[in-house]
Length: 418
Ligand code: ATP
Ligand code: MG
Image (cartoon, rainbow, N blue to C red; front, side, top):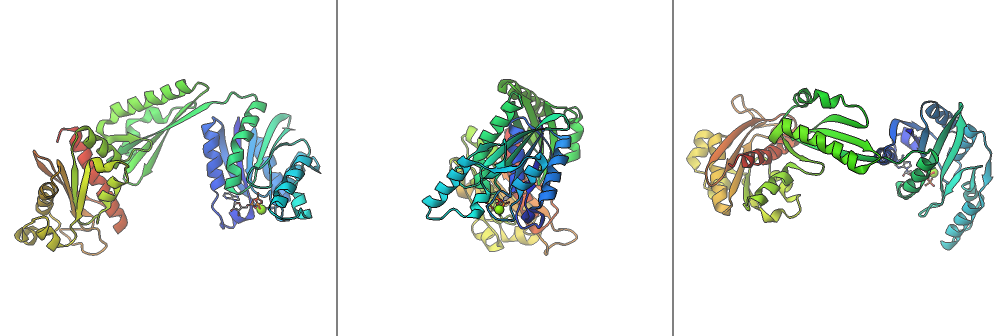
């Protein structure tokens, strides 16, 4: 089935609320193998709602709508739906009883306004709302000679979400489609630009359903999103596995993980495998690299701790970076980074060490040492390496890119037995 999402509510058009229902519905429909072709938003207006249903069903088999089922006069989704269907609204007794009971159990009386919520289009399949008053509805109709389905949900997400599954299951059964399994696997690639990634997988990016591959640039990384659909879950998984294998073969160490893995968790897994530990000396990142590492549950197994060596005095007194080195080469220099990495490892007694020193800006840059210049040094029992980087963006972006890069550099180094 081809579906569209229709979000109903003037609040959406005014920008007063964020349309999280559309996101929820899109995700859930995709997971169930339903192709979503459009999302539309329309205000609380009977004529425009009726028109929106007609427009959507001219293109698609099903419309999944949310909002405007409340008791007040501004909620007119049912009127709009009835107008489109060409069916009257009639009191639905079980819904009337459900609402009456719910109100009375809370000490309220049933009013004529609440009564509006029980007037449903004749012939609708009704799904009682376990956490509110307005039910969800599923209507079947013939439009322009073809069978069509309309699902309508209450607007509040906490009411919509529990109703989604029963409604969709019924819709798919009525539409005679075997529910398909949808697998989404996000392959995460660091250190490359989006176009460079695209150039290496032109064939994959051309794939057509039931298997598609999308490419998305994210801060500091590129994602390849593999989406695979099949009535057999095992087959959907196998197809995703095949693509992942191909991508890993082509990109090698540039692939740091999939799905919820982060650079920090990937680095952590390597350290754990080596039964080794890490400490960090952070200057311009102010603790951000440590923050990323500590986001991973269980990281205390390999992450000993860090020193935010922000001032030169701390670099000298606690990290033993000689004053002469700081004076001669500067705080932001390969020599300083080298010493910080060497000594943090010793001070903390860890297997590996990372040091980060740079200019996050916006002030403090010069022609020779511009904003965004960051030295990252790695130390192991065997060697020390220094990496010069130039990052761009705001202060926050430079800090965040430097922190990620530091972890990624050590991850790559560990893969080569650093
Ligand atoms: P109610 O009975 O609460 O009036 P309703 O079905 O009439 O529910 P609306 O009046 O359209 O729904 O919206 C009520 C509230 O539900 C909104 O103020 C908002 O908090 C939430 N809501 C509605 N639509 C959306 C949406 N598309 N995304 C996220 N939240 C929404
Ligand atoms: Mg309302």
